[in-house]
Amino acid sequence: METIAIRNARIINEGLDFEGNVLLKQGRIWQISSLQKLPVADRVIDLKGDLLLPGLIDDQVHFREPGLTHKADIRSESLAAVAGGVTTYMEMPNTVPGATTVELLEQKYSRAAEVSAANYSFFMGTTNDNLDEIRKVDFSRVCGLKIFMGSSTGNMLVDDSHTLSRIFAEVPAIIAVHCEDDKMIAANLERYKAEYGEDLPTRFHALIRDADACFASSSKAKALAEKHNSRLHILHISTAKETELFSNALPLEQKRITAEACIHHLWFSDEDYDRLGNFIKWNPAVKTSQDREAVWQALLDGRIDVVATDHAPHTLEEKQKPMLQAPSGGPLVQHSLVAMLEFVRQGRLTLPTLVQKMAHNPAILFRVADRGFVREGYWADLVAVTDRKWEVGKNNLLYKCGWSPFEGQVFQSAVSHCWVNGELAWQQGKHDLGIRGKRLKFLNS
Image (cartoon, rainbow, N blue to C red; front, side, top):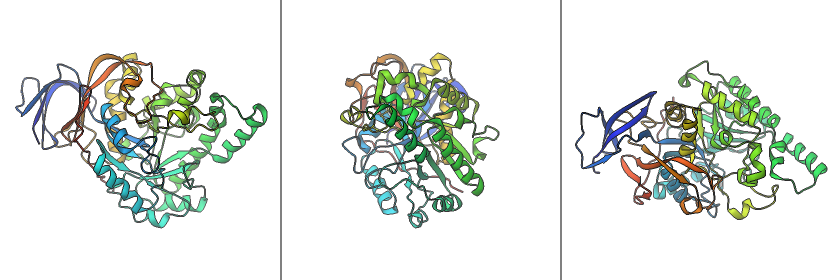
């Protein structure tokens, strides 16, 4: 492997914003030096003052393989991730079949070793009757356990109280939870169908999957975690009411209950449904601007710990169905960094906070070994960003589904380079298609 010297970088890391050089050797960050101390290497890349950040760690993506590869696959979406500055992802188990046995889970890891352009881990899935399989998982090599406390693919809704209690009592790793109360959602749906008929516009999605349904489920998960002293991570917080469940009283390393915000809940509100319709239909739903502002406040004050995408592609044909038939989810992993950089330009957050929420904190929360920071000895997962206006369009989308809710959006920043384990995986709009990511390791205790 060639050595690479990254010179004249504006490095954002661990609360600092400084100029320097970085030497990459044997896949790792070998040396961080001042501008005056020029590293010697096989290859020199001069960033000319552009940003250099640790590669992003996205703790919630759906890459659809196996079984749903007409929407996306590990290869296509990992390439999109790298082009967006995401060097590491954690993928969800609701594929077909679902990753609810160790054998099926390991098949996903084997496939990723063959084709993934980024580093990877896969969550173990849960059902009402797979606790024996969960007990077999080596959580030093698996990022965590995923529970759908809201309906999902196949039989992955876990609604048996005894099973939930046993899982929270026994599992030593992070329990990542999708929280929506199915019974409340079903009642809302029947009420709105009775009043307005079957052909509901997309804005009703946020009324059907409302704040009360989210809070009821999230508060139940929190109560279980507190009872059993579990490590609970509640995904994609979308409501003001839910933000009250979380605390910033402890540093992240000591928290047992943590939370995630997603790009779409920070960017869109229910005011955007008339314009974008099913293209911003997610579960949990995009809700009011007041909910969005509360999620922002919780993110900034430390109650919400990480920012992710919940990248979940569906085909254009699927999204163009009537609202009640169209699936929920959308592609975001190529645009998460540049979208958050727009908020930096607006003054909503600082560069160090962006890096904290999208690189440092996921590494801390999941106890990822040797990643998430610009530190000597760590794997060289890095992303360089330059100032350049560009418009999202069909011609520059890398998602297999071929569409984005950001189409027509002009971004002010662009990812110019992305290194995965010290190898230059993306440079000036082109991939090195021969590069493969690595399976993550975790420092579980």
